[in-house]
Image 1 (spheres, rainbow, N blue to C red):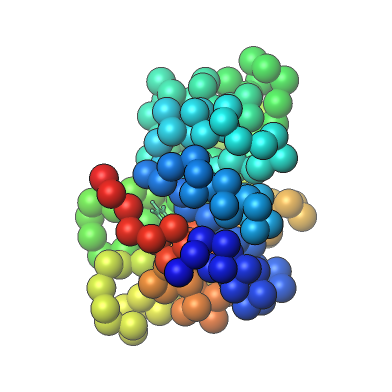
Image 2: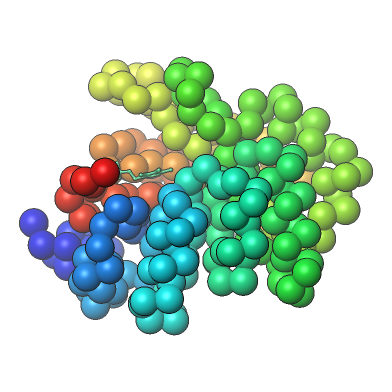
Length: 219
Ligand SMILES: *Cc1c(COP(=O)(O)O)cnc(C)c1O
């Protein structure tokens, strides 16, 4: 199906209060343009180099989000323009983003990526370690990052009960953390092409949809 048709369908069908991030990794600039022309303004990428190149090539009213694993030595390249870094999963990375943001006088919005899936390979904080970090004075001194919420992924399985349990877990953590932060803590990013409807049922406020908009990725 055409990209523009899918974008319009999603804009029409997602409930109010659920933000669509079009995950455009591995897709060419022309495909992003088609989504842009259909009204999409928020794009998610998982690799720094691609994010930088696409940011330069496309209109300036796009909000660019980093959703993939981020190495500290690449943070400097995206901090000047990125609108949200969803994949913050270590103290070192949070400190690095803060430092780079301070250097250029910005406050960068981030999400805390939490690991709930069964696969060990998946990235993200283990929740108890995250809580320890958030209680630390070192965290409280990070003035150039603003925590907007939580991001996570469900286990890669066809078993809907497992996926639902993962999303419920993420929603629980989100609600537990919310009182530690102010008004700006308003984003629960969960749900991808195959499971976003379930994620929304479980309280998602931001879905990250790639293949069902742009087609299969060719790696
Ligand atoms: C690739 C990716 C997505 C999108 O996945 P689709 O199944 O193509 O919708 C969402 N979130 C993250 C973190 C990703 O890396």
